[in-house]
Image (cartoon, rainbow, N blue to C red; front, side, top):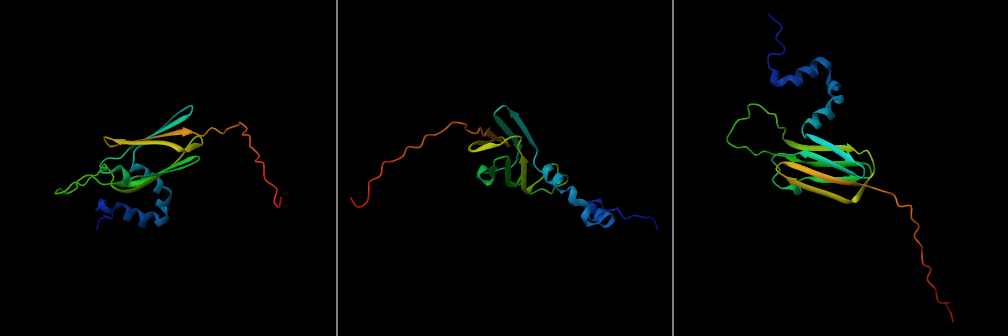
Amino acid sequence: MPFNQFKNMGDWRKQWNQFFGDEFWNGFEPHFQNMQTQTNLYKKENELLCVMCLPGLVNPEQVQLFVRPQQLEVKGQINLNIQGYELVEEGIAQGDFQRTFDLPFPVRDDKVDATYENGILLIQLHRHIPSDTKKQIIIQRGTKKGT
């Protein structure tokens, strides 16, 4: 009887888990998640531009953006909603996604611009520039109690 363990390639991950062990894929998981949303990150002196391909987004409010001083997190769901057809080949990943980007410099959380058009999400972030200026505090004159 010939060795035919991989005859059903649709079940390839299960076969690889049996061969390499369940822990084999843990190191690759972030790469599989990143394949789901194609993204470019651009920078210039005081700005960052994140360009993310999100086809099939019906409502941009379905995407959540979180900004930390040096990190951007994007969560959402891609659903092409093609009905009446059987999927033969999938090149556009669908379902829930979550991407976290470490940013090359701290950004402001109060100045983030995000727009979605023609399947592209543009997120513009602005560098946080610490203020070295002094702010004078005015001391209020109080009234004496008991007079």
